[in-house]
Length: 266
Image 1 (cartoon, rainbow, N blue to C red):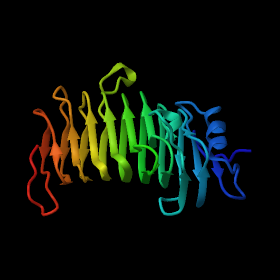
Image 2: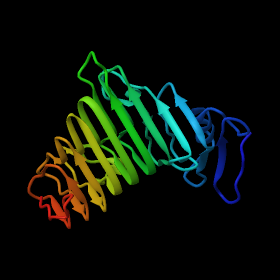
Image 3: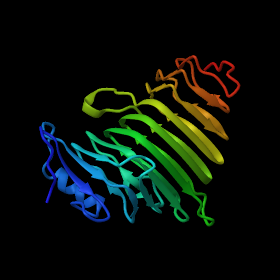
């Protein structure tokens, strides 16, 4: 049985008790079966700790909203041998969003651990605390906070902390988005990203990139910001860069600075 809001938007509630569902995935799937662009649904998650044993798949036209990043906490220990949705704690989908909660994916096994994985999707991620660790003692484990592959994401008011035995990526964007057959950048506002590992990267932009960063903080023990492609035109505004940075000609850094407030140029 679903709760109903006035107007065109509908909702269901996930709670330990007294809600419509106790399973977040079941609530998301129910909402998706009834949602449309004209009538999106919201899944509200009550305060509490919810452990995920498999990837949480977001759905089109469904918004997953917690009760605040300090109130609603999702935990997992999901990893795998390759980078794909099944290796991630959360998998995105077009016109989906996730907001107002914390995510913790702490893996002690597997080659890759990922917080949020987006493949060819347009998704919004807002007001999230995200922690990912990959500490498999038997492998060179890598970890990714948010991994965007050919995706156009809006990432706003998000804190990302990633640690790994091998390589840690706070936010990793690969290739430009072809969502809707147009080249769309990932836009990041008010993000605080830190990657710490044998090699740790804060923001890592791979291949063609027009991504944009505003009013943020980037740090990593290897490089705080890495932009590999010379064919893109990434733009970084009003952002603190703590650590080394690597960027090609064409990258625009406007009012970027280090921990001592000294200017940092791209």
